[in-house]
Amino acid sequence: MLKNNYEIIVDEVDYPKVIEVLEYFRINYIDEFSLIQMPDDLDNDSYNRRYGFIGIALAFVGIYLSIMFLFWAQRISYPLNIGGKNLFDFIYSIPVIFEFMVLFVVVGLFLVYIFSNGMFHFSEIHKNKKTIYINNIFSIEPLKEKLKNYNVEIINLNKK
Image (tube, rainbow, N blue to C red; front, top):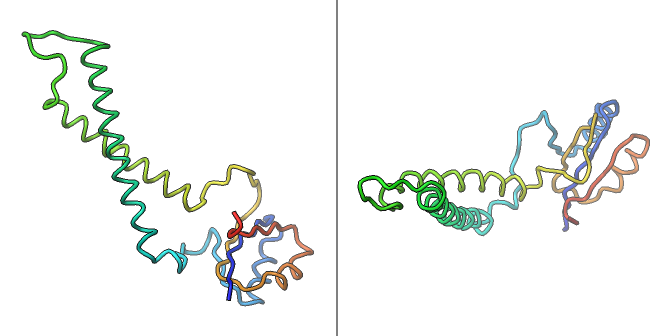
């Protein structure tokens, strides 16, 4: 049995009526006022493991870019020759390299998580509209028939 996930974009005026229709059909929904629930298909290990690989890759990118930045800043941009010491010393750069690495991993994983879960909608800005998510519904046709009198937009999330 194929179950689909849908996103319903509703005007603020029609929002209470659409909620009544969803409750009439006994459809579980997630809106901005309900607690966030994780879908059932995200429990597999391959989905959760990819964030670890992305985090490791971002750590190496952060290390590389921080070493290049420190080398540029200490040797090329503003070289200070104090007491005959080297212009670039790796040992004294380790705390800065670590902080850059942590910054890249945290910000990068945050952005990867936001984009991979579809939390940004750049295609259209919905002003005065509310979004409702419907998970694991078999057929949307009876719901479309009931909602045709309201100003709603139904988007199938599985066809993206």
